[in-house]
Image: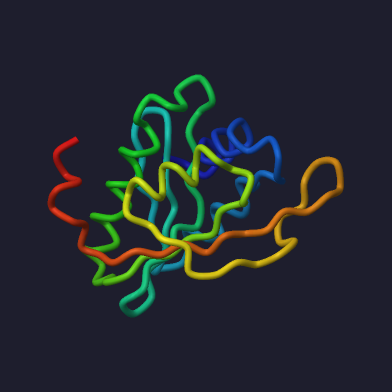
Length: 145
């Protein structure tokens, strides 16, 4: 998936926060630590350094949200991170992004910290970023879905 396509999906999916530009995706993907996994209508961008993986962003085209696309790329992200030697994964999510929080919690993530006022909203207000983490490899029971 090319940087322009990642940027398009990200722009369409992220309406409450500033979407990332193709140049930002190109810059991130130029790092040997960064990788992208994707399905037909979603992608996840991650980074592994040492034994830690960070989910940088996950986006699903709006018309395909809540149809399993996000879970598919999250599972692919976990597998790719594990293949790269990660033992733990973490991410940040806006506290008001309830669908994403539900996805991450059902995938075994737990809140470990909070960053107050981290994400700016279109109306100028700010919401906290929740820091979530989980161990890798995944629990074998979650593979059968």
